[in-house]
Image 1 (tube, chains in turn green, brown):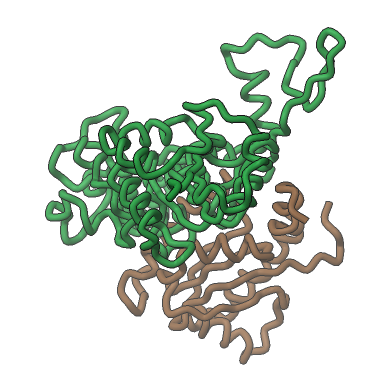
Image 2 (cartoon, chains in turn cyan, yellow; image 1 turned 180 degrees about the horizontal axis):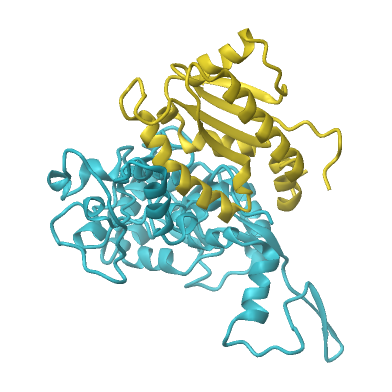
Length: 320
Length: 147
């Protein structure tokens, strides 16, 4: 019997998810034994016309990482959706919008201005910026459109499963590949990770005080967390209470508070406001003035609370 | 700037022990105030998850009022303190989304403050008329290029 074929594709991403596939180490040999890779732009040379020539169902599953920001990415993911019976959103960006999604905290015009005109290291007196069409030496050149907002994969196409994480951890990738091969998948739409919050699994759980109070916010950039204590109890923003577990608590074990890459559990629809609800009520403040003062010391709540999930949040983006 | 006929839509989350009863008192005392408020009775202002606020704004409200018992008077001892602690952080977050702070107001209204309740709704309505409609849903759909 022919081996099932799989496709890997990337959109607005950093390449970390591709790295995560390579991080399977020797295990990857088992994957390659079991499946044929039909598309993997980062490692193998395939063209769009190859994909267009696939018969429907010929390639079993597409693992797509990265958020969707350009018209080209939209086109590609729609094509893959058309061809593949299973689409897995691979990693935080495809799942929730991820780090590129933070760009939704500024408008498209602000993003372009910051990138091409206002950055201190940019010298661009002619205000050159990417355009859909341009003429160079008599040739007509085209670029994909830079869309107004960043979208997660399921804002563009139907997604069957989600593998969370920035990047997904190797054992989860392996488990999901095995589940697909053995056809032992959970109901469609599932996130292929546990549905408990990270705090439940946290190795520092015991050090969480009975009554948790935050009297000032601290940042890992300017001070070093105690290697044993609950981060929140020390005033470091740790997204654990609002984040899905399953990552193996890698950051916590590396003495870094959780940044929330696994996204919320199925019970929370909007990670940012859910976390705000939790952390806000922990402030050690008995008056409106103290609450305002403490909140004022928190740098960039939007970027912190929605670090990986802005495009999938209720408000989704900034409007000016 | 705003259309003269613009009637803002305010979603009001009122704590049932104080503010909802205060709103009731405003009604039974026949105090006149604008009919801009859509009331949602909640057990406590501390129950008002910030998610409710952004959801209301995203789905058509021009403003959101959260009203609870005065600090110290909470039926559950400190629910309203939770609301108080979250509020400034929520305003900061809304700033970053480009939503004016005046659209979301936290107010303490006791069961005997019918007058105050009416005044809060009046003030808020005036403010929102100045700001004009939020129209988040439509503007967002236009911006994202969704029909």
